[in-house]
Length: 276
Ligand SMILES: N[C@@H](CCC[C@H](N)C(=O)O)C(=O)O
Image (cartoon, rainbow, N blue to C red; front, side, top):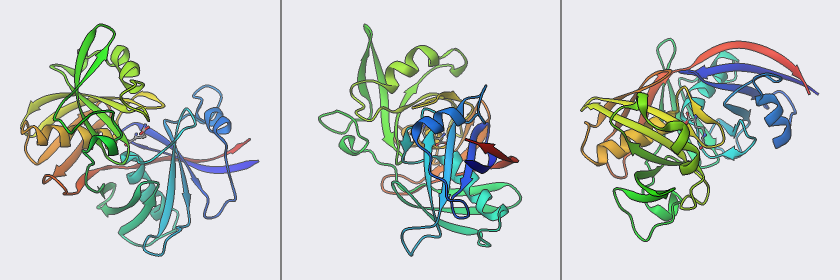
């Protein structure tokens, strides 16, 4: 099977993007894992499959798959790359693009040369909807890891996140705690785990151990979740810069039931063809 694709990234979080509007391509999880392999495949953190919408109030649908082949609900950096992809490929001429994902509608706005602002919708904070096993909603939840207790703020941006506050992201135990918290029994669907350092009221530093991938250069929904957790705890202002290893995102959240706005770049690397 011949597959035409575009390689893109958002702050180093990299994507293989496949146009299903013009190509009849279906991939199973084994094929996705093979394509994700950085030695023998194309190599990516997530695969984005762009297809026609199933509802009249959006222009496209896109589906997101992690490098391990699992399908996920939402992807912040992927949303920005998706917007740039449909524009560059001439699939739309709009500057504001409504799109359907597996967790509903989001809206993307192209800003200037390479920036995209994504209205990610309101964060989900009720534990049963994250989903998280907990009796009631709390600011911080205690997780047993080996013989330690770790406290996480938990947020869904469509996909589940746990956010751990650390004093220094450079020395945070991302590789040790990340996999244990990602697959912790309190997260029935697993979760992405953010290690978040508050620099000052306008600046956060963040590393994210992503579900189904491992640590990435940047995670858009992770940046939104860290900003929401930090704003809710009144540690930062409503607009905050989130610096990840791959670069910085601007996040705005005005509080409970309000949408999270994420602004950042989306970069096209190359177009390619792979045979499966
Ligand atoms: N890199 C993404 C998140 C991709 C999905 C995530 N790994 C999950 O399993 O939920 C982003 O930029 O948000």
